[in-house]
Amino acid sequence: MKHFSHPHEMQVIEVPSENKQQICFGCNLPLFGSCYSCSPCSFYLHKFCFEFPQSAQFKSQHKHNLALLYPPYIQGGCEACGEFCNGFTYNCSKCKFNLHANCASLLETEPRNDRERYIGMFLRHKISEQKKTKAELGLMKAKNQHYETEQARIRQMRMESDLQRRRQNLYNQQLNSMSDSINFMGQIGTSNYTYRYY
Image: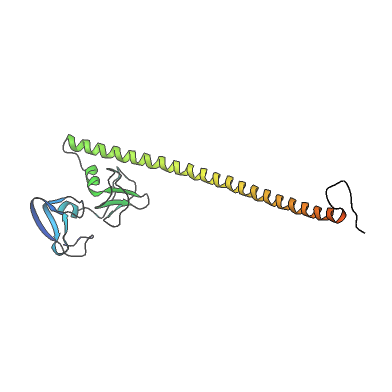
């Protein structure tokens, strides 16, 4: 069978116990149970990672359709767990929203026990915190841009004022220089005596 994340045919293999030397490309966890393998490339996927749909919409978490991406096409962290995305990740390019495929499956499946229910609640809480933080950062960024624009305007006004003052000083120096030369033509020195040339 072929998978969209790998160009070669893959074979089904059984891994009876956890194999820490071989990890799944989709979730970066050690192999166990039914897996898909491309031995020449050392490329492995758990059966459940192989079966993740290429696009999905998790209405409870995000309003847009999410595409399943794989390294190196992912940037940023998972909105649910906060970890860096280095395996299969559902992504919304419009909102820059990332969700590990495993976190998404935990959020969308019905919890079988209290532990799974707690994990789902925890991940939902983390997502809402991340969204709130992103919104606050957006507001801070907008305020900061306004502040920087205002600061740039003030700097520009100071520079223009300084330039105008320099021009005025230069103009005054030229006027003084011209009046000194006119004075020199009419009189010499700064004493009370006036010398005139005819």
